[in-house]
Each structure stands twice: as structure tokens, then as C-alpha cells.
Image (tube, rainbow, N blue to C red; front, side, top):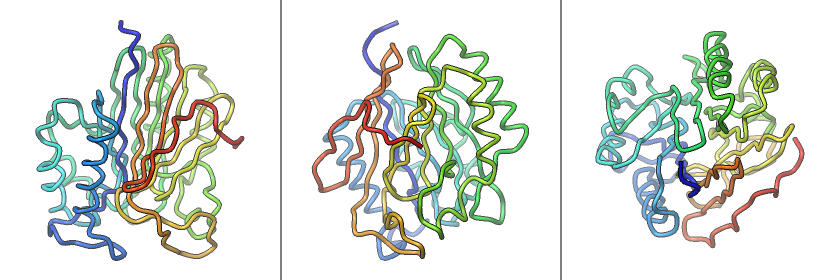
Length: 265
């Protein structure tokens, strides 16, 4: 087992359309994603896995052809989980087979990745089913001697925006009850909120990542779009459980890598 860290590139909330010119809140989502990928190749390559944490498309099943065109030739795994704007049946059909993997678990070096499905049909809010919680519990038990990164789409802690917090994870207590039974979880990671945040809860780093298209204004009571550009996150997972991470805002300076810059949750 090598001591070199495992680099994970997280892209989230792509909101792609089948139409290459499709726009969301004034942003051409395909062009924005392409700019984020170019920035990642310039500043964060190479990575050992790519993590797409939901809302790959904007309620448009033909958008998955765009995902396959962009990432289908990837030489590293492309892990995907659904968000509230995804079309789950189409996602599973279009992204079947390598390099794509939808949900499940994956091992990289001293780490295990657990990818959770918080999708609920017909609502923007998320929920983890009893079966999904049981799967998480079992995966953490199997990985008892390994470090674990858990990811989902919906935010399990309040974002501080009244309108946005109505569409978070509906049963976060159930999630944390499972996590608290184990001592190997190092990171809990999500998308959905279209903004960057980091906190610390019982030794677990809690992180949200901005969208590859438009961002939401933090701490707003009502819906508001932020002026910040597309973004993404990279994470370096070390064999001893340390995590270095940074958010890159496309066209802006790279944030300094962070190991302990978290605020308490």
C-alpha cells in the first residue's frame, strides 16, 4: 500500500441539458462545466477518481449523453450519485458500466468511499431510506480498519439559508446515528447547496462544494444567486487518515489547502 495520497476530484450540480446551449439561471451549464474541467486539469491533475455528487442533469434525461461524452473515456473511475434534478432510470441506463459507477462503495488505498442515494421522487428534499442506512452501517463495519469518506447529494446540516434548508436531508439524525456508531469516518461530503462550506462534528469533517455552474448566495432567507463563478473541490486522502482539500473557483485564485480550518457544527 503506497503512502502517496489518493486524490479525488469532486464535481457537483452540473445541471446539464441535452441541448449544448442549455442555460440555468443565465449560465450555459455545459460551457461552465467544460471550463471547470479545464481548470481542474490545469491545477488539480492527476486524480485517482472522479466524484459526481448529484444533479448531473437539469430534469432532462438527454443530458446524460453529455455526461458520457465528457467522461466516458476516463482512465479513472467516475462515481455518480443522483440528486433531486436527476432522472434516475435514465441515469442508470446511460451511465451503465465502466468508467461509471452509480452509488455503492469503492476502495482506494487505505480509504473506502461510500456513496449514498438521498433521492426522493417528486421533491427537492432528500431522504435516506432504511435500506440505505442499513447499507451504510454495514459498509462502515466492513471497513472498520480503514478510513472512510461518505458522500450524498443533499445537505445533512443546515446551510443557514431559510429557503434552501427546506430542501435538505429530511432525516439527518438517522444518518448521524449510524455515523456515530463507527470511528472510521473522516469526511462527510455533499453538493446541492451550490456553495462552499466546511465544519467539524465529532472529528468528522463536513464539507459542501460549489456547483460547476451558478452558485446560491450564502445565508439568504429567500432564493438568491451569488456572483461567484463555477467551482469544484479536490481532496487528498492520506493513508494515515489526514485530508487535505481545497475549493477552486474557476478564474479565481486557488484556496489554500485545508486540514483543520473547520468551524464547529
